[in-house]
Amino acid sequence: MQNPNDIEAIFLDVGNTLRIVIEDREFMIQAKLQLVELTGAQETPDAFHQKLTERYKVLRKRAKDKLIEASEKEMWTNWMLPDFPAEKIAPLSAKLTRLWRDCDGRRVPRQDAKETILELSRRGYVLGIIANTITETEIPDYLETDGLTGYFKTVVLSSKVGIRKPDPEIYWEAARRVGVEPAKCVYVGDNPVRDVEGTRAAGYGLFILFYEPATQAKEPPTGEIKPDFIIRELRELLDIFPARK
Image (tube, rainbow, N blue to C red; front, side):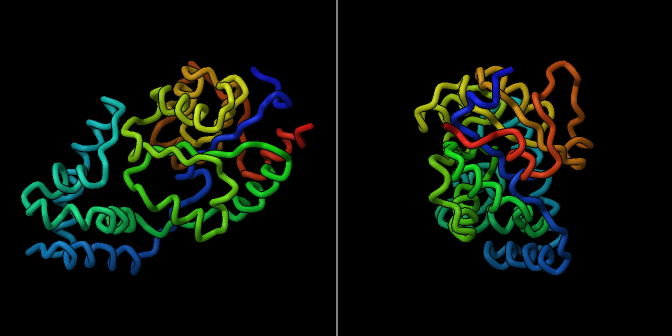
């Protein structure tokens, strides 16, 4: 395990790490309705959503098996709505992805996310994001809305680079972009299997698990590879990483 004092760059996950999903029934109903309205589908919102869900399962299995991510355009024209005219669906792909994700609930930042990011930056750490995500614009827009864009030197999204965690290449790409060797990087994520495996394979100095019960229930830790630290609040990172000299 690398000494935290030797760490120069801190990369963070977003889903269930920086942000969480809040169930909002009316918000979710509206998202399903807007999917129908935007595409012109001749089905009820629930029936259309169910059809998309079945297709999405196939796409997700492919992504996890091959560790590749489709672009938003490819996702909608080739997988989710191949029976609709591609010339109609392609320009709508970004909006469709947002609505599809909204069907799960409203995404909001953790209460201590911004203050922790600002303090880590003040302490001299290079910050970045590495995230498996189907959207290409949602995370950059979240950072812009919260006034955090300038605090992250790079944002590496699987939907943009085409590869997914735990492929070590996505971690190496992030390290290259910020100019820090992997051994002096740390990754903070909530997945006790995928995030640990990828970080170790990439040779990162540390992996910190953000303990998220929902993630643990879906993908319980195997016990084969363990994190270096486990935290339950983002502000606990400030106890691990002192100001850099």
